[in-house]
Length: 80
Image 1 (tube, rainbow, N blue to C red):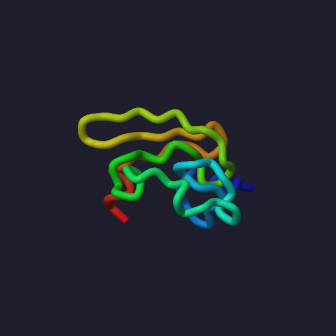
Image 2 (image 1 turned 90 degrees about the vertical axis):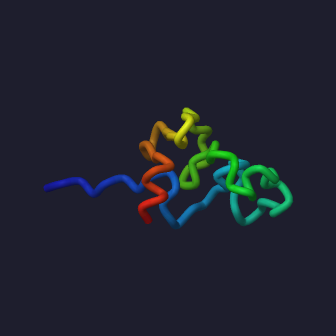
């Protein structure tokens, strides 16, 4: 019996805001920073559990790691 893969921190359905950590149901759209709305800021919170992620910014992108839901790389998002 093989375990199902754990969904990544940015895979839908998202429950929390990736820039604020607030539940999407109560998050005010104005709470999202302007730099994030422009695509200049990497996600800081896991969209699945709301935990703060470890983010590494590189010259060519970023990586973000949730302790529960794994790692996502900005280059992976370009392929979708």
